[in-house]
Image (cartoon, rainbow, N blue to C red; front, side, top):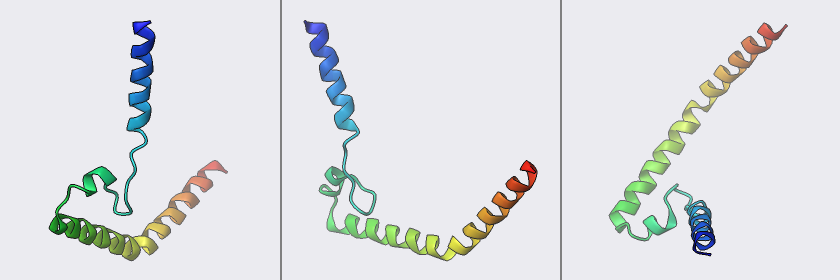
Length: 77
């Protein structure tokens, strides 16, 4: 009986660990609540900088993807 309870508790712990929710800035909600306003501001600024860089580099990333896929398809023929 103890073995079954241990297995059930371990399964519950594993399942609950995978259910952590994150805010739109990629920080776990429980961690976000513990941040100071200054730390939250730093997280938001970092997130906005990453998104800006992603937007700026998107045309290059897309061009590389097209070339890579073209080379791959060429080798399949």
